[in-house]
Length: 421
Image (tube, rainbow, N blue to C red):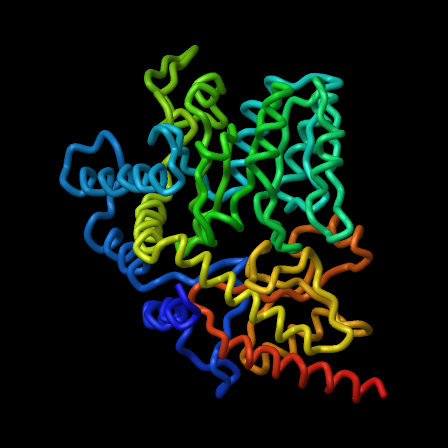
């Protein structure tokens, strides 16, 4: 598609997001550029959530009455939608969690603590979100396993050559991010997985920043587990999922005990439900799960290929505009002239200025960006900074919004420079 054709993607979807049509600070039109932290929710998703609570609110499974049947159908129907969305081989490979962090912890506590021992090695990378670092640190402390980290290339991407050198027969787990929320690099997860499997290692992929923006095929990647959060893909907060290969999930013990995850309970022992319910203890986030299904429907209707192509063009435009600003340093690999090779986000610093100060003043101009360490403190230390500002785009953003952001950023920088003069 041409740029003009792809621009219709934002034009035809913005009316679906009521939150985008508001003024902040009394008279400033909102420009929302914090999509890597959380996406906005289309009206169809919000209506689905409201419809559940106003029409179908009941607990799922085992209820014989009409509301419970409808709630169960919606809840389990989303599982089928998610399985199809990521091309899982079975609906039973999809486990609902509160978020990606819980999904990673499920693997850490259920599989890693029961399979790793002293001297075993876990490979992750220096660019990981804290959620894909801290659980493995806990596992290492409890088991004596050793964590090794893939470093950055000169272009601040995933150092694949070094990754190859870290792999050995001691490697039992590789846990890496698909798309970095700070560097924006798109890591070669298929090749990462293929190499790890040659050494008998399992592979977990953090797909929080990829699933909302591009097609993700778990069978094509051949990963053992993959995690994602609904709130980054147009769904509500409080719902995410773990994908795991069926035989692997079957071999893993329950993560938590309680209702829903049991088959029979006696005073001295219990038997557990079949997959995926074995890992879903307690009353779940029913409405949120059903709304996740509506989000999958919405994204599928737009087409992930169309979303990705449009975001590539936004990326190229964003980087061309930011290149106009002196002393601005963007982290991560540069995209090509077509915006390919990285995600539609830019984490940056301006020499001599504080990222939090920049984002605060931009907010007063209606521009919402993020500042801080983005839950990647180790990476920021390697980059030699305590934090950065980050503008992140989604399919409902426009080139006009990028223009307004850059103008506001230039004016903010000029204001701080004048104050320092």
